[in-house]
Length: 459
Ligand code: ARG
Image (tube, rainbow, N blue to C red; front, side):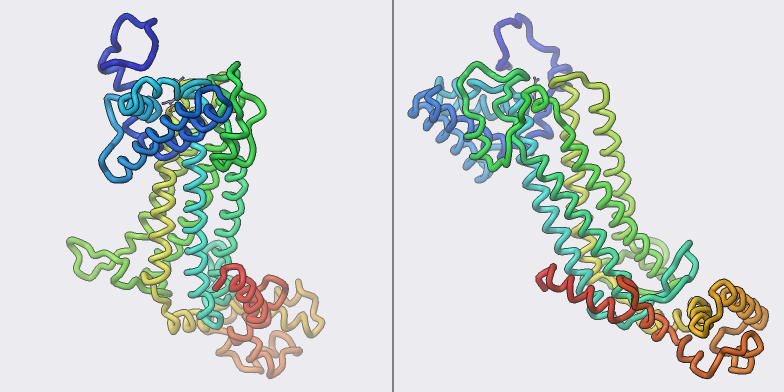
């Protein structure tokens, strides 16, 4: 097999090392970006008269033919080429002959691979943003129809205070919004062109870096050629943002898994997204959220891998960087599939058990704060009110009853300021509705937020 590299080499590579060194098995995913990068470069070589316009056109036509053949399924990149960059160059020379040998004028695989991966990542960030948006919309629709559905709110996994289910779901919409904002910032740092930095030092050939940057839709160009070919910060930032997205997906996945247990019974899985057991006929398993929770580990692993790959690599390009691709590719694959699966799960995979939720919030002590706040409204200092309510809880626990089972006289033995209206104050619907502080779960507050999101999500 003939290699593109120079006549300096007398002997051929050890076949095992040849395979060890190669990246074509995975970087073939960059084929379209590699061709686009080369087309922009070839155009620039023509425009700057580094090569003739006829030669430039030949290069572009050849590259376009390769692209068309690939899209028609008539060409698939692979071994024996070492990587996608050599593969396309070899194919071009094969196709158009001598002129093809001019394509690599004034560039290196180092600026080329940096350009390809940025183009690929930019495209995928845009796709992930759409998936996040879709998930937000799905969550919104469930939230909108559950403004008045109450669900126990927890701290420390202990019943704390009831909340509107809409409020709970809107919390996830906020989290995914931060994810989208983070990705937007990462995208801005991905969208910078390293092309024209050549191997590391720039080139004496009179190239036009702004031209290629504009052709490829880059916002800016790298100012320092060494930084341009050495920078993989954007890869780490992308995987780090992805790790946070996965953590958000994993948290909602965990809640769904809990909600559909017999113990909680807050929701049930529909047949669309549940799986059975091979042994136990009664089982309906939440495999989808479990897989999402499990796949989170992969993305965290990729983040660790990338941080470790980059650490201690001296300037400028080093072959270690070839190891950046698989973690990035797998992060995109994982995150895209998990976002899609979660959206389907929200759309058609779970049904909230509204009666059970209502029953839950009516049968606990999660209105204890309201009992204390009631006394506060009668001018009892909060700390004192808090202790009185603690006494009432203790009393109820010994009797195995709830606040609502007490009568007015019972309440008044704890404090004379308790009046008949205490009972409506303890009703969970009123409990929730009264938390009208900005951003609270009071229905008026949640309505405002639902309206805001409706506009933002274009629903
Ligand atoms: N396959 C290589 C990579 O992914 C392409 C760049 C190779 N550059 C080099 N100087 N060997 O990083």
